[in-house]
Length: 125
Image (cartoon, rainbow, N blue to C red; front, side, top):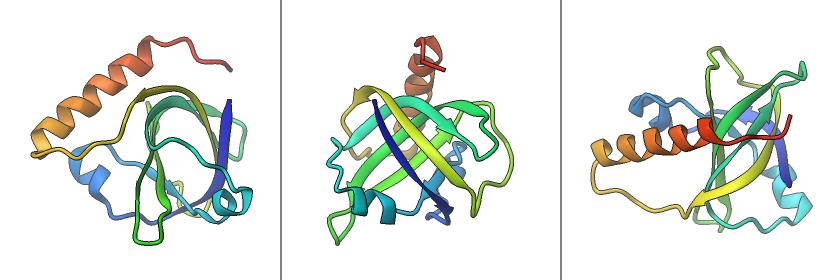
């Protein structure tokens, strides 16, 4: 099982606009660890600093102009402010490759489908 840690930083706000706010983490630890993780959408868990875990849809990618992927997670059943907190993403199951969508409506439907799959999986504690 792959883990990635980092401090929550401001993203572009696109997930929030779609109705699925994400926690974006700083990529410095990812770069330092020299991990090479397949870009795509994963089912997994996110651990907060207090030890509480949430099921999550985790996005690795797409790569930016520096060749580094975006690292973000939508935590199921979480609401609150995570900025500046250190999170640990645990990637459990690869769901699908990352791909662009021609409309926000199609993307919302795909995210909802991904979340349904995540809810049906048995994820380790």
